[in-house]
Image 1 (cartoon, rainbow, N blue to C red):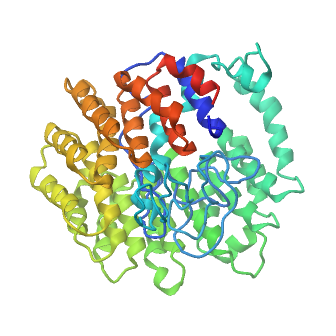
Image 2 (image 1 turned 30 degrees about the vertical axis):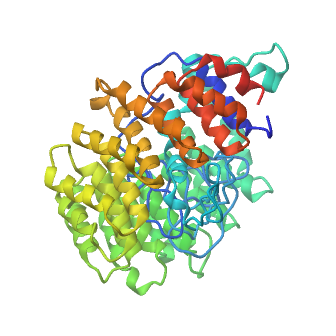
Image 3 (image 1 turned 90 degrees about the vertical axis):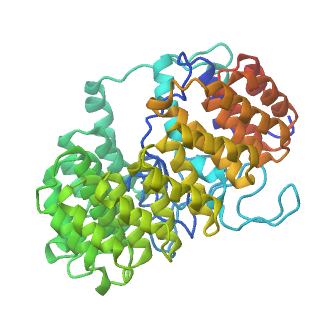
Length: 546
């Protein structure tokens, strides 16, 4: 091969050859999908209800790791300024570090084949500078629900072929469940000790990890980390308390969010103002607690609504966006009328309105359907994009007038990212008419439409109500033909992964042939994933030797 495949994709593909499940992308749960990152995107987060990308992370992306105190998903906060930390547990596709000041879901990532950031493509034409317009960015933030590698490995109980990769020829790594007692007796003390490490990143990661254990006994060590001398550790401690889910943290987090005298004492700042980021993470932590415990009827919801609406006197968007995301997580029905009124107010900040729309979609607030339909014609792209995404949560296959508006938007002008998201929404909404519309786009659409439609069809067949569609094979054949007739590596990657998600192994030989001949590492990564998803055994040796 001309260059080495990123190791993570090789391992992933090999693991899936041993997976016993067939006919559905492993681990897909359905119901959510995210919007990619970028400076021109609306909030698209697990927190706001649209996908895997998280709305905020204190210094990185992905799950907590040795180099990043992040623990709740990918993405930065909502302002275009600021710098982020390192990536932990993310893709190896050349993504830049998260910008905690960038729009939600902000780690940059390389494209498949040609760069989605601009420059010259295979055809020699100038492409958009906005990476959000490529299917690869959408896949980056949504692949987890299709791949779910951890669950696949545990389901197999034995890590297929990792012995020769990591442990020497002939060795094998037995996957075993770690008893809760062992975690409490051995791992927990080590994590507590790590909160006192000399390295701030270790302390921050430990605060997140202690929260992820779920042991309420860890409230004390995490709370102590709120006094840390490094603001990044204090931010992670806020998130750690949120992940832990103990309602005892609620009053403390409210005080921190509000920058009160009590809150300042809690974080050890005396008379100094609490950092904006720390306050934002405290708000998000309240939302995280709301995912574990019903706090919708406590003082939390009024406090978050007050913070959302008082941002006008505080020149930082995060202090409104974080409460909006938190309200979506908590899911308080009582907050819906005020959130709708806020989102309709065109005098409010457009990014905050977009996040509020995300919160309403997360809550599946049907009262907001007209708001989102009107949002398709909003003057602000962020609002249009969030509306296009959110309608995938609120519309059903029988909402024909609304679906007609969504389809017309796809074929019209306007923001490219919003039209791409509308295509994905059609796949999530389901229904034969939407399926056929997406198939026509695969046949006749432009590069954006064909690739996003292929992804949308993967979403369509991953939804339980569509999994028994008798035309699944025909859809796979159409995408297979699209794969065969294009030479564009970006399009080939999209079609291959869609075929893998559809388990259309009739395309396996053609995908394998391109894998053997392609010089693009990113494309070969996509092809390897596709072959792994369809468990195409003939490709195993090629992928292992890549």
